Length: 105
Image (tube, rainbow, N blue to C red; front, side, top):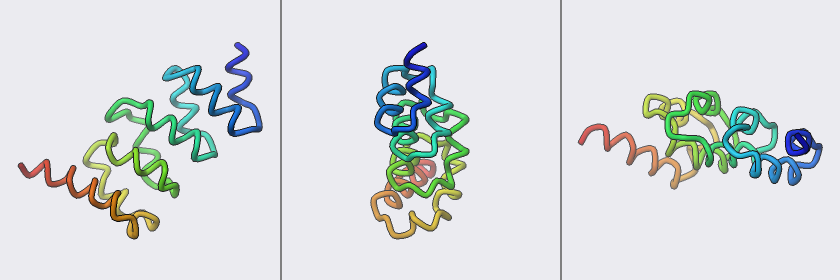
């Protein structure tokens, strides 16, 4: 109960720690948080192909997208490629290319 209350705190550090302790049962709330630190934690905790991850394909945070490209359904990867912040990030582009080329094998 107190952790749930702390997960609504103004401070992103307090919210992040509360969500860390709450774990996957607060996953949807983590993925909807306005701060990228909390969304990043949510993406890292989310299982592969978790349905709510598709809502983050237009996220502007490189920190979130870096983890998202490894977990989102392959069909969603082209939407991530259209993200303006991804075009300049070679690491993320390379990860997407590897996942897409694995389909052809």
